[in-house]
Length: 276
Image 1 (tube, rainbow, N blue to C red):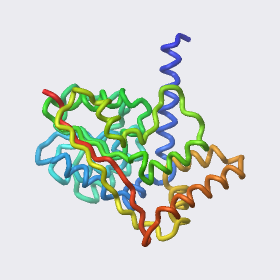
Image 2 (cartoon, rainbow, N blue to C red; image 1 turned 180 degrees about the vertical axis):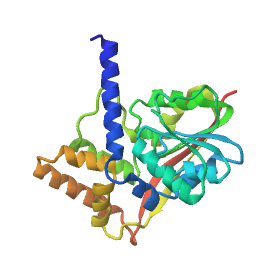
Image 3 (cartoon, rainbow, N blue to C red; image 1 turned 90 degrees about the horizontal axis):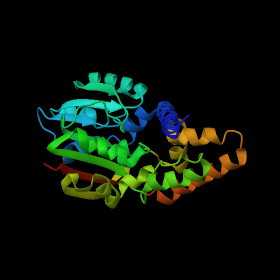
Image 4 (cartoon, helix red, strand yellow; image 1 turned 60 degrees about the vertical axis):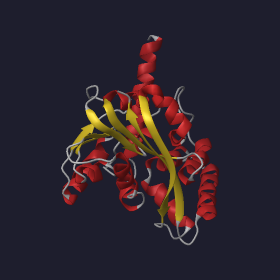
């Protein structure tokens, strides 16, 4: 097998692993019950209006796609994991939102060049392993003068810290894969997009999460509902000592951040215009 063919095989295996990981647990419950406010915030920042052609990349179950459709956008929600799209279709129908759903890899989007007025992603594209490849696709499918809108967890915020805690307990990533929270650094995203965009606006904001009254509630929910956390715990299935250590670390994280029954989760909201 040639080096190129071997790299393709490794990439296919990695994408299959990611697809399976996000199907674990109940990510739609996370989107619906914990981070529901993020999608509307991104839609508002992108200024989506009637008739805009909108692509939501790594859309999951439609946290941003459905609000974009309700704002009048002609929306395509794309994601690597078909199980999430299935849930999204049902939720969109229940909310009276009409949009299209498409299984797609963020690093190899099945859409024509310059085919959307707005290309956005809400804590989604950040999990594509090859950041530059994903950024190149975001830019490619956005029309000149169109909007690219991204909302991602910061490395310094609560979820970024959670991923840092889990990293030593997870299998080593394959060569070339980059940490998701890097998308929460303005300078990193600016580097990825380069001079292909103008008018970059970036703001750090915080999502107030009052779903978990006690630290144990947070840990229990993420152990049962959030694919990346479930995957890490499965990696420790035969090691009770390390499992206990991760349990303790996640509990300490929540204890240190929980104030008045709520957590504040920092994210970076960035918008830019595709250069003409």
